[in-house]
Image 1 (tube, rainbow, N blue to C red):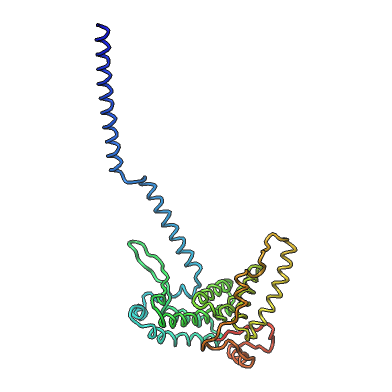
Image 2 (cartoon, rainbow, N blue to C red; image 1 turned 30 degrees about the horizontal axis):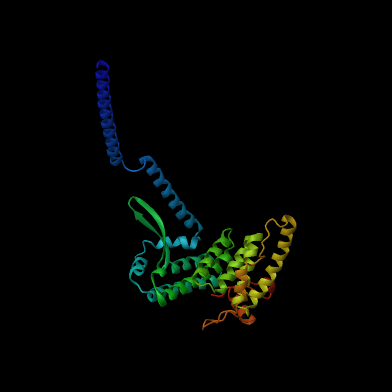
Length: 327
């Protein structure tokens, strides 16, 4: 009986201990849950670090875009305080903007014809800034540089008119930049012509001038890109003699260079498709698009010489290397 009593008491004690332990565990679990709900998700320092990294990446992208932009486009920022531009950008119609900027572009063309390329580029900046421009934008305590493309706010005919005007300014600026022959000129011309082709994929002048810039970069890769652009230009304008002559010249140079590269590197960088991909070959086989009322790109030799003479270029001296840019 005594042993039974002791055993019974022991069992009761263990039951009380288990009950208290269970209550403690439940209370601890509830406290943990309350602490978890009271604390923000994730470590605060980690959140700050990720936010900082995201901000740095965004600023890096903006900086990369800014640095890739030619000076003549960066200089549009000089009009961010101009009251005339501020008002016209807000209230003027597309036609009113073009009417305002067209005479400015013509002034640039006149400077170009006189060989005053710096003044011409200044006018092209002034003209394009009515539609596309860089501006300072203040957000909180920070001041950011933002590229605005107001032409994309329009629709239908207005958008086409605005972008046609922008293309004409960019093409003129590209021709002018080629003349300057600064170290950064080829890269800037490629940028300008690529912008044009994003708006008008059938622009022969853009393909041709970008090809000239690629050749000036003087590498096997850019020479290949030049041949591709010239081939596309020839397909779009089969009657353009300058395009055909230039294509023939640089395709021959590319063939020689390609043979040297194969001899040096073997098949290390060889492509199964060759110079053109299957898709590009199919595009080139297509008939040139109809002009649909657009001005022909074919220019007679006499007219070409007359235009060149105005620009101070003598085509008679060396007709093999002639390069002409009409406005």
